Length: 307
Image (cartoon, rainbow, N blue to C red; front, side, top):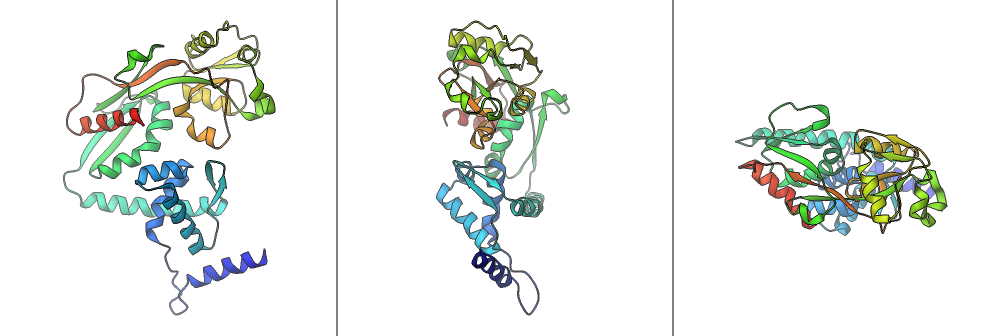
């Protein structure tokens, strides 16, 4: 313990120039990897966004930690999370990166503004974690992301819409197929979660994201059990609210795996009866098909379909 403390102390001391009192900056090339890893909670997703390997990202973060002499992340199974020091440092790193980004964008000619309109859940849980890769390839684009749940502002260039349906073949134009699974907080069931049978789930409080229980009814059809929630139900008007309630331990919810990637990695949610995952809809680009930069954004969205 004392040795680790001395190493950290020596590392901090080595970063300071004794003649000027100035602190030596860490390797600046490691800062984007640190910022993205903090946002995604995944070395794999960070590597994908920066077009590097997970091993290269791991080495960058380790080099940054060794230079600073502090641990920035807790390492877990298939996930990472910020330490207190990491959270404190992230505030300064993100501010610095934003300043550099804004300065760079100001120098670029022909700035293009692109208005994206999408439902709040897909915008927050799927689109935002992936926008970094789009902006990396389109540095002259200023994005304005609007949520349909919050009301429309500017006329959108690209509109993401959701369409219900249980036949996957009907969603050939969708960039994301919505397959639903039953999920809950580990606080709700504990060790019983792995052994729960499909018919037993409806004895627990059921969380609905629509008044007509569309997702739950499709799930019950796939499980070949009647939809009779004997444990009661709570109805919300968005997927986002239902997922939040699920993480709070209020009941069993329905969600697409693509929208709860981080919650699953970090253990805030667990999947029940994972073999039951019916199609309940798809996210598509609303007609008419856009042109120009909007068409480029649409093509970028559709490229995720095959990943």
